[in-house]
Image 1 (tube, rainbow, N blue to C red):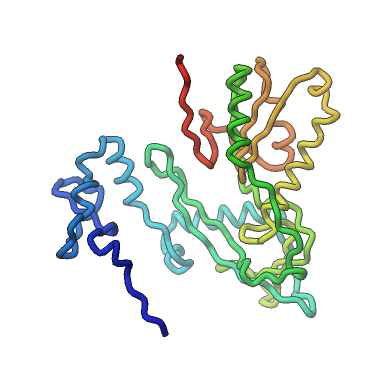
Image 2: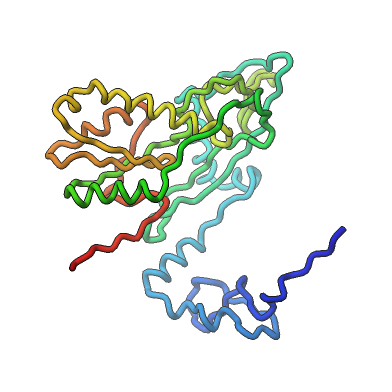
Length: 296
């Protein structure tokens, strides 16, 4: 086997430890390797951060994300998050329980845990997501087409340019569990999720809708959303020449309706597809943009 060595050009640097003489509990102090010519603590120090930045680092450093189901099952908060996710999947009729069809195989699944934070670093909620093993999908059997369009940066700039030039408002909505609302055409089976108990041990999940991890999940979601938005062709709002543009990035949708006192009609079609959440104030979706106003 070929022996691997660290890059020679990085021998004078260290980037995995941070040392601070401050008593701030933001980051744990660690001893640097001897002989480092440029220790990162000389350039990145907690004392140079603002109070808000320190609070943010302290908040995100206190959270612990379980790496597997055995670690999460011991925490009541994560147990509640998993129960909430299972309930959402069942309410959405993501699968039906049945015995495995002859000649078919069931794909495995696992839980993925993530702590969602507010912009100030405070914990928003604990998110447990059930993800299927896409690396075991077979092309032509478990999926066919997987392509889903992704917005380019030039599209984002054009979207913002129209809003600025027309002096129109920009709104943003978030689709809860967006990838779970796509209709699945292929016959895909999945093993029962961990901790999911049934009277018959031979039952498996026959997926009726897309699930996180499936290769075709983004395509299914985008097709479902586009199908709903096409209803505006015959909408009375279009007859009244009311313009509305949508910028879609994964489960986040930015809405650009023409300025007017009542713009909530623009949410009618997306709301027919999946539950929506309206953030208290607009925030640009990924990819993040840095916008500078020209005052000249």
